[in-house]
Amino acid sequence: MAIRPAVNRIAERKQRDRQARRAQIISAARRIAELEGWSNVTVRRLSDEISYSQPVLYAHFGSREGILAAVAIEGFQELGLALEKARKRARRGDTVKSVAAAYLEFAVSSPALYEVMFSLSLSVPFDDPATPPELRFAFSQLLELFPGQSSKSDVISELFWASLHGIAELSRTKRFPPSRQKERVRALVELFTFPRDETAQVVKAR
Image (tube, rainbow, N blue to C red; front, side, top):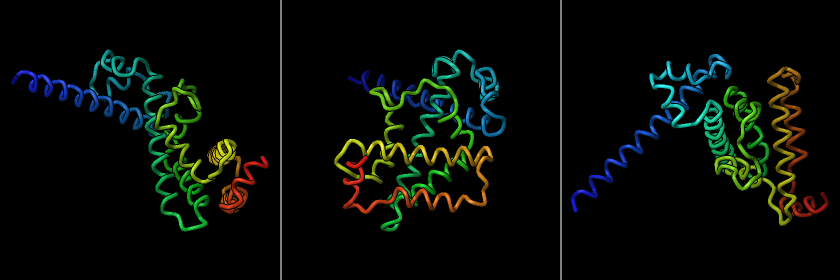
């Protein structure tokens, strides 16, 4: 009877150690990317950085792309939390504005993380049965802004997301002059702010 609890403790410790190694690898990948760009995030470089053999890294993630995908998924969880916080803390009538500001702040404050989430070619599925819960969580914060009975509320949320992403990318690449940033965000918020009792009508019309 005493053997089983001991075996369980060993298994739990191994699981904790595995999770700690995984977190350390992801953290190192993010750190290198922020300082030197994603092209320098290689399995060999990570192995040297955190003193784990390359087979250990492959055992956790399978490939370099697996590491980058794990970073991207972590990024979506962080984005979702930032949007959720902004949504819940917003004053009545300012929810869309608050979430838009939080999204753009996330993109500016974590440029390498935002890049791996949206600009690198990764096999992370979107809008698919296999979509990770972290991605669903982030998108759900946008869905909460546009309640409605029609499935087209998804489309409004996607359009809002696309607009925010466009602003973030065009600002990052200096295609948008920063002097008009407040004005363009204000105009975007006005376009996507609907009285709650009219939301269903707007969705239906589209």
